Length: 242
Image 1 (cartoon, rainbow, N blue to C red):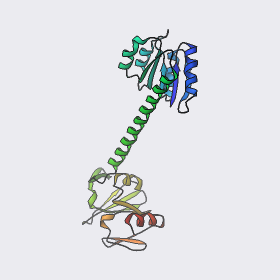
Image 2 (image 1 turned 60 degrees about the vertical axis):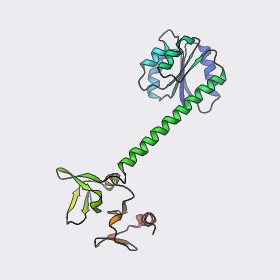
Image 3 (image 1 turned 135 degrees about the vertical axis):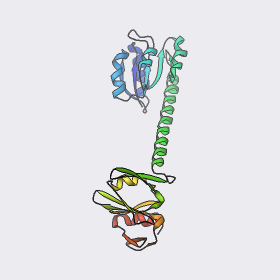
Image 4 (image 1 turned 45 degrees about the vertical axis):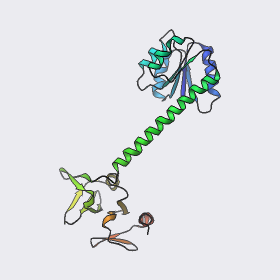
């Protein structure tokens, strides 16, 4: 994790810097004696953790923390214990009283490491959930633009999709109706559940529920013979267990 140290006492900076150098999971980016000099680097360098003194001539460390939007994790380092409650009210991770023992430093940064791991896990889970939501088997319909309107199509009505240069022709079941839309295969596949709709050819995407028979190099859907491309054949047969 990337961290910085802000303290108006050079000796305090030296001690904390030495502690940081002993830990391979901490990247000490820079040290500052004036908190105001750190503002641009905090934003630009995506700092994860700030060790910050409280009693400084330019600005109080707690006041400085309050000025930051999307603030990193804070560990206050100070000789004055009376600020502890105020620091924790601002959601500081820890409050270390000088002189800081190494074992307390270890305990404090380990807590930050755990918090960062939990935060990253939450973000990953949210992204997976969002991705699944966009491509979920529970999805019942999509909207596609055709001419001057957006048309609602039930997924269970799509037999297959045929590529025609810059357009896609969507074939709808039990009708002679086709819907022509200006869209790429990549775009429409992002809207469709991947376990129901498979790309089988550079020009075809099929709904597996409507496959009548599968031959060596082609699929039959409603008497339409759709070729299976060489680059898609292995994945297609593997997914269907053939």
